[in-house]
Length: 336
View 1 (tube, one colour):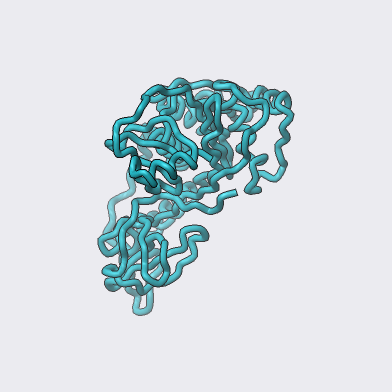
View 2: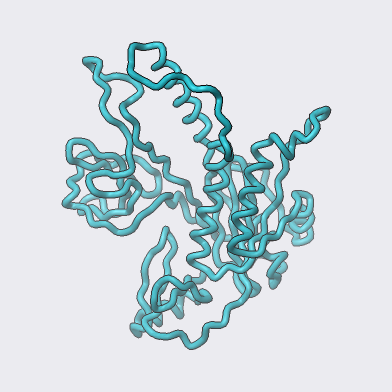
């Protein structure tokens, strides 16, 4: 495994190094180690001996439930990631619409129903899916000096008799073109069709499992690896199949009140991004529960959750006992 390296300022990523060399730097006080979103990094305490950089490509295998990302150069495979896709926004938008319609039938002060207005952008569920991919890429760009991004160009199903359906009306097509335009701003974009990815995988002698939800390299990272290797080259077979399995945190943003009233007909406030002074999802250290992340808050107390399973550990943590470690928007489910 390799370790990302940062300049003295801690912002400019340099070429990664071997774990043994990073340990030697830390021992000789030439560098300082730290964690960034589940990845161990080092920050140099002096000017680097060289600033030369090799081409680094990120392979992206989009999916409806799981997605694969691989960061690779000609010499090494730096990181494989299998991520859970954001697929719950559509249900939340529908629930919001139903509750808004229900309020109009009650004697509740609310705005009048408006005519259908042009959205002017992507549908919320589609935008959330592609923004999640972009968030991961932006995080990887902070860890590695990425030059190229290789993506499998997925396409909507063609409907017979429906002219211009895929181009003009399919959210999938609209969303991916928005994603491509954002990627082109930061790196060189390479697109491959699905059959081309399959041909590259067969040529490398690799097989893809039919179990799309399995936390194994052959589920999605096998495609992201061949996509990256096609651009930078250097390997016939993967040099390792270790990967990071991540899942985005499902935060409940601020609502005026809960959807259902409590006893007495009262509706308490619900949601938000702050909990007793901490941003929700932040990694904190608790004397009893150790490494956790922040959930909700009530009556001056904070709930803490397990960093891997997301299970709530307590609802009665004192904010004064928490030591802030890092902001966070996803959890590391597994390291396979």
